[in-house]
Image (cartoon, rainbow, N blue to C red; front, side, top):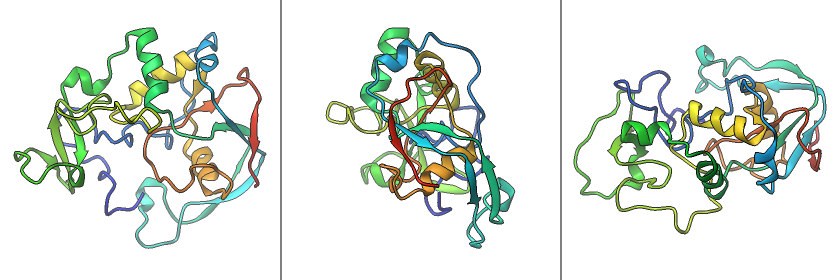
Length: 224
């Protein structure tokens, strides 16, 4: 994520949820979700799993725009065991099945507010709080996964889009239901670096899940 458009590290004002385009539910920087599941959630998702073989890759960057304090640099070798990661971010349709099955209310829905990239808002939107070091992230009351740009917006034609306005708590709750887990930062980066990852060019929008040991083994194989 480049510093020009990503939420600033630790700069979300107040006690509300972090900027809500899905980046607040990272597939990076988090370990496996705790808690078990029957795996019934995965049966409800037509998931395609990418098989990532064990190996060593170069993680991070030496580019000066990286954030060493966030572990983005310097570039360093990381060795991982084999794992599986979903080929695509969790979609609106998949998240809706989870919500319908569990009654889950997201962090944004409970707070009644989230943050939206300013470029997606109309020019005449009323002034609101912004993230201190990333003012292009604007607080929008009523923004949540069903209303990505706030009241008046919806996901009627976005069923296949990555679900957004999802916090870390929301993502781990989804994983527990789906019989999956969040990948580690290293797992996410290695998969994202592969040219054979189906959505490697879509940046950090949304969140992907990694398979638990008992998840169905079907999908494609990524190169090292």
